[in-house]
Every structure is written in structure tokens, then in C-alpha cells.
Length: 121
Image 1 (cartoon, rainbow, N blue to C red):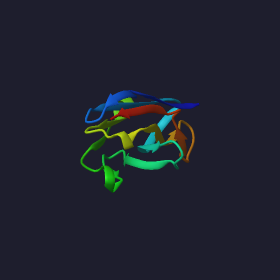
Image 2 (image 1 turned 90 degrees about the vertical axis):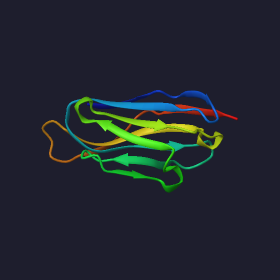
Image 3 (image 1 turned 120 degrees about the vertical axis):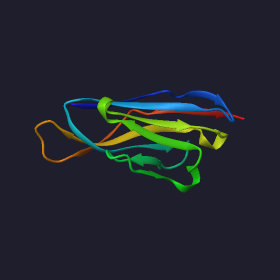
């Protein structure tokens, strides 16, 4: 089995920073894209940022310049550095990854359980 476990969420004041981490574990052969999504109350889940195994990144335009995605391939971990946080960034942040398990040919998409980020004004 494969698991994605997020950490680093919490309560922060507007203008502050948080760093989220997501570690993949289990029977992992390889990981392609990893990324972060978020879901605010009453809204649909939306893309925040993705990063390939080679380090190419993609961000939703509205978050460019404040959020930075990175990964450590040796640790099967993806990070999201969030700066200049705003109350509208309040959401549950979910980790996502395309993972090929050992012994398999195809990759499957996995989600973490989510971590709450709350930004107070």
C-alpha cells in the first residue's frame, strides 16, 4: 500500500508563513508528479501547485510569488512554502501524487488526508 501523510498545517496570522510537508511511504517504485490542492469551506477543491520528478513546477496564477512548491526525491516528500498568507488562503490542503508501486507498470493517483490551514485577520 501507499500512503501520503501531510503535516505542517495550523493557525497563523495574516502576513505569516507556513510550510507544509507531505511524505509518501509504502511500496513505492517511482513517483511522477506531486502537488498540492486546497478546498475552502463551501468551495470546490482547487489546484495550488504541482512539481514533476525533474523539478518543473506549475502554479495557479493567483498564488504565484507567494507559494513555492519543492520536493526531495530521495525522501519521497513534497513541500509547500506559503508566505504572506491571507485569510482567503484558509482551507484544507491536500497532497496529491502519481505513484507507481513496486512490481506494477502503471501509476495511480493518491491523495493525502488533508491538513487544515487557518489564517486569521
